[in-house]
Structures are given as structure tokens and as C-alpha cells.
Amino acid sequence: MGVILAPDNGDATSPDASWSWTWFGHFRRALAAAEGIDLDSMVGFGGDRSWDTVETRLSPLLSHSDDAWELTAAECAQLLPRLSEIISRWHVAPSEDLQAYAVRGHELIAVVRVCIHQDVPLMVF
Image (tube, rainbow, N blue to C red; front, top):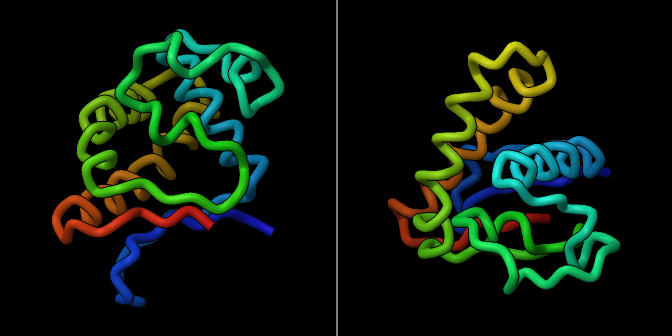
């Protein structure tokens, strides 16, 4: 079973991004690390550190545990600049893992852009 991130627009031709839950977890841990956050120490991920104690534009994407949830178009707009910046750095990183995350990250960026443009939520299921 995996995770799919897609615009909630009823259009089957819209882009989506899909991962295994494990791979998505690794992707989010890498995003959190890029922000100086140990995801495993956070509430919802086995830790007791509150999300109120961290400052990152990626909070809407990082702060949910692994079950179905959604991001509003406004939350997508909030996280897009920082997500794009990190993914761009990963694309040229010496780490093969980060380069692989960058490929999937570009798929996620495409989904986020559709959500912003169409003012629809990003569904994670």
C-alpha cells in the first residue's frame, strides 16, 4: 500500500505523486533534516516536541502523521517556494538518495502548482 498526493479537482488527468509509505517517510525526514528538524522527535512521529516549537514553511507537509489528510491551496502556496528550493539543491546533490528524492519532489511540485492554480486542496491518501 502506498501514498498518493493529488489535487482534489475531480480531473483524472491531473498530475499526482505516489510513493510507498516508507519511501514517503524517508522523503519527509530528508525535507525535515534540510530544515534542521529531527522528524522522529516531533509529535506524531514518536517524539514529544511540539510543532509550535519549529519554524518552517514546510510544516503543512511535515506535521501530519501517516494517514489520509489534505493541504489547502493556501498551505500549498506557503510551502511551494521552500519545497522548490530544497528540491533544486537535491537535484545536484552528490547523494544518490537526495537525487532520487528530487525526481519525486518535482512530481510533488507539479501537484502543488495545480492545487494553487485551481484553488483546490491537495489530497494525501
